[in-house]
Figure 1 (cartoon, rainbow, N blue to C red):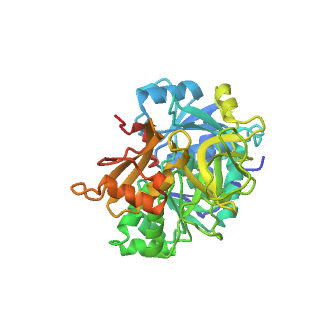
Figure 2 (tube, rainbow, N blue to C red; figure 1 turned 90 degrees about the vertical axis):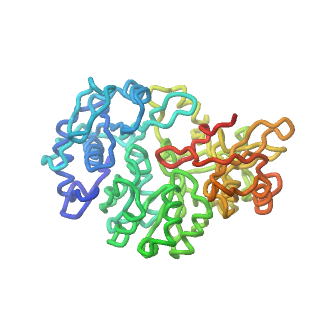
Figure 3 (spheres, helix red, strand yellow; figure 1 turned 180 degrees about the horizontal axis):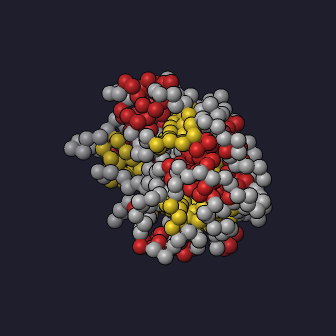
Length: 481
């Protein structure tokens, strides 16, 4: 297939990557990845110790240029999880930055240190095809150890090109973000995306509102973030005028990895005049939908299917929902060239993930507006509540709770109820822990905005909600005793 990174085939002096005060031009990146590629064992897979630095970007691009699949590793992984990933993926070596201390679980694995200032050319590799593995990305295990999603080169190319179409993304864009580089969001969209376009990425290392303001006010055009980041931005706007100016000047603000509360959408839009664009994807599918840069950025929706992506909602029995009314909840199923090829060493899990006619079962529940805009209401396993004969998505109740001035954070779950089947439970972080809003007050607040059957029957108050590295609320960690 054609190169994933055309700008590296005839590189120039344009800036490609900047991490803090360290940077590489396209010419320097081509030389560094060429030198590293010559040291990567042919065939098989290599692990990448995915710290938020130049070395991670150089390592992954070098592997992709030479046709070897990369396995990005979360440096915060515990010993048991890391041991499972290494045993399952069986990499021939690990690529890491000089000086990085690797855990004991990697002691016997060959270490190849990444020199970001190396010089060399790519040795012609065996011809790679669109179906060859590019990345093995491990998904969070909820009922077992993480599974390795095999992402082919075809999926990376098609998803990035579809986003370029939807977002009018070009080589003139400069992207800023502070996302981790062992997930699809930060690595594929946030690093490989700009490089495929011939543009530039400025990585913050760690997210801060000051860093966002500095980079957007210094010529960056796009911001990628997750809802916790945008929540911090929304909170800071009243006291940071440079941040207001920065967001107002951005060409595109994009949120993903979880639903962005409507309340934060509205606060950012009111202060800056800019609307945040949401998109929807997952490790196994890369990107499925997005609000377009030239489309209507409706708060609470993730837009329309991207070019090449087929999407449908299905009932519990697997039958397709044929009429969209903004109310009927169904599971999202997708198919298209953006999908992974399967789970590594797990043919059983791969078979279970697909229907007989090739649709991938996402496990995400949604409603569709009549014009096709998708609204995610939650995960089938944790966010679909069946109460009093109704199917209720936790997401809309969470949004309603967040509109209450006394609520800082909120999560909604269901728990068994002898009468209702399940009752709605709210987990609330109050703005003022000394004077939280009462349970009845919150129930009435939700009932007045949505419907009486969607009000929480139980309210628990917490100091903070449990979240993972990408800011997603870990509902299974909530104590329901």
